[in-house]
Image (cartoon, rainbow, N blue to C red; front, side, top):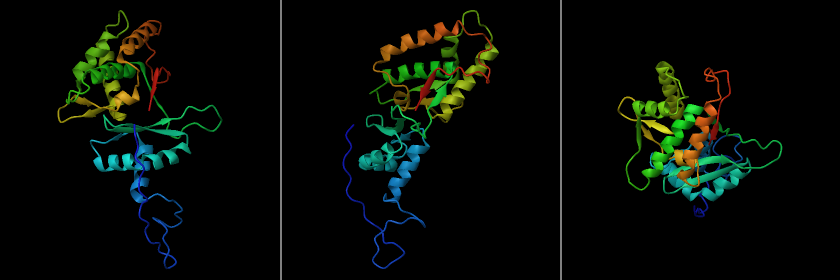
Length: 235
């Protein structure tokens, strides 16, 4: 990723002493960033990511002021990741072993079914890379994917429906899949490639197999909300 240096922004006149050139946006403001740059920071920190296709003005601000944004984010142990090809920008925590360095943007845990569905969609996303077409998934397709990874001997269709709906809801909440005009039809976000980074998608089948193997040793009631069975963290 190459980030161009930004020109010095214009200063706005302050409301105080005549001739003042403070960039003041509110009483007590001591910041140096212009309004649009602060708005970009807030949007990045709010997460989970910025889609440059959906918000081209914000995307342009991030590309233009990437150096300044990263300088600020470094102060709070965060890295700005920009995928120019997919037009996705997001924040990731810096890896540092010291106290009081936990990122203010907490990573989100995914449960087993959510991880399985996300990984399978990640493979589809890479297979369609460069095609110029969106990757879609239906509720029926998601249910079929999770059915392939059910524990041996499990035939509880009602439970499978619940897991499917829960996994889709979670991925929707994280904006890894996006709603469409059609009911129970979703578009896979390009951000999924950054949320679940792999050097090669050839690594994903082995990861899926490991999840399936570990599932065989779990009790059938391990999906209770009180149990912490997250297997993957993103963003």
